[in-house]
Image 1 (cartoon, rainbow, N blue to C red):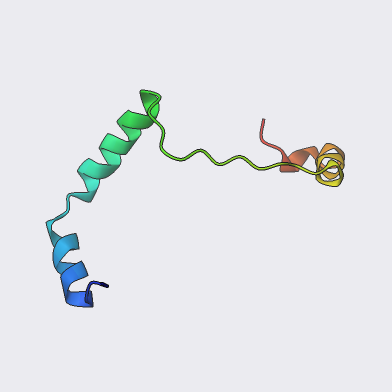
Image 2 (cartoon, rainbow, N blue to C red):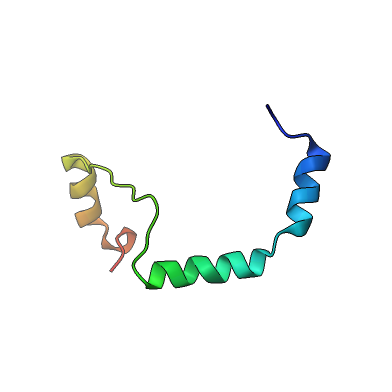
Length: 58
């Protein structure tokens, strides 16, 4: 059952977003990660990235 807009806003008003973000940062630094997404890079994408190194992180 979907929450009504007023219910969502009321729940958000009780949240401490700053504390949630700080805890998330602490979790990441401690190596506690949630979802990890991995994707396969095709050969053509890999070749394209080698030609344009500005697109890669490093």
